[in-house]
Image 1 (cartoon, helix red, strand yellow):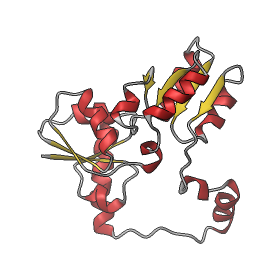
Image 2: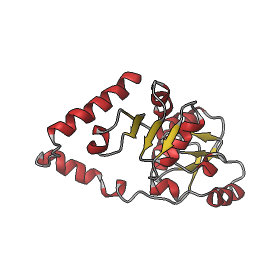
Image 3: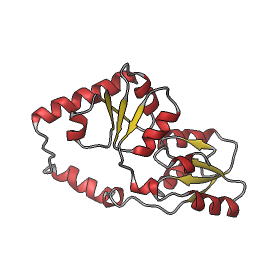
Image 4: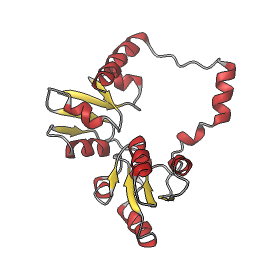
Length: 194
């Protein structure tokens, strides 16, 4: 069995993984593995997306991203009724029912690329609402409709706090050497697939 962990997992999880992945490269990473089955952790929705796009025997961990889990088919239907010309784009960490409604499913970088090169002018965006700021900056001539979901963790990080931390250089993350070494192996394997 191969263990694939999402890159946002802790160092301890990476240390017991065979390889890591991002939402953008998850399918390629899993396809690169020679062993079946594949235990995909921690996100069951990203794992089910990978299962839909590979021939691997994927075993899903029961974890999920609460931000993407809050995006529902009902919410998308409501926004589509209000904005019938809008395409629906969603992150692969959304549930299967939401992904199957979408015109496009991809990571934030993939969604950004898709929108930039699309002839469409309106988009319902199925991921964390702050991503719309980037989309608007890159595509000022297009309209974006949020699904009203925010990540509390991401929103605790501000430019002011980052500036303060960089100026002070006194905050350090300490990871046990044994965990760091094993986690680095999983990360390096992922980077070799890219």
